[in-house]
Image (cartoon, rainbow, N blue to C red):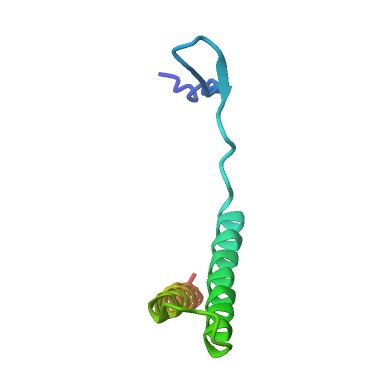
Length: 100
C-alpha cells in the first residue's frame, strides 16, 4: 500500500457583501508587529499620563479624576507588559535548560 502526501489547495480568502462588491480581507499581523504595536500603545499611555500630570501641576485640569485614571491606565499597562516579559524570559530559560 502506497501512502500519498496530502495535497493542500491554497485558500483565497475574500468576503462578499450583501451588495455584491468584493472586499479584501485585511492582512494578518505577525507576532513581532503585534508586539511592537502594543508596546507603542503602552508608551502612548505613559506619555498621556505624564502630560496629564504636568497639566495638573500647571493648574490646567479641572477634574483630578481624569489624571488619576490616566495614571492608573499607564500603571496597569506597564505591569502587564512586565508580566509578559517575565513569562517570556522564564520560557526562554526553561527551553535553555532542556537537554537535547
